[in-house]
Image (tube, rainbow, N blue to C red; front, side, top):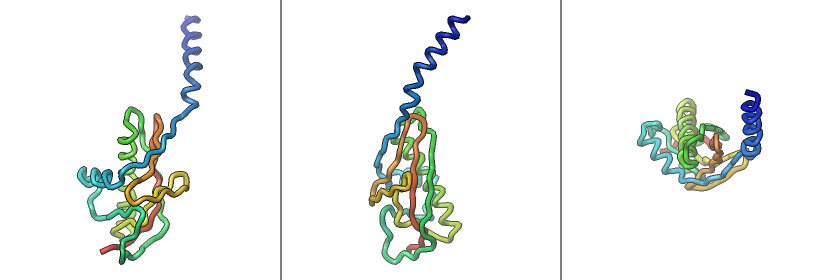
Length: 145
């Protein structure tokens, strides 16, 4: 039994360098594709529109500087699938918050991972590791026609 415990301990210690070197891969992925997937699946109800990197003409801002930061379990998922899932979670949160504020849109939406803005009109930033994936967004609630 003593040999078994020693071998188990040696194996556990040898795995530590792999755990210490956590992966954090940055991805820039198609925003509208994920929005459409969420709409098709009924996760988003379509009552709130999302404008990545821009504010449409005539928008009336209701509240500025909203943020959300979401993480999801990425274990056993491709980075793209984990990123899509966590973006949908963030969008669902924004949809519900916008409704509570009387808004029908989230405008000037940018990625804001670790408080560093990434602006794009068609891509969002996601960070994926072996265990977790995360998305952070910042924008404004508005009413648009």
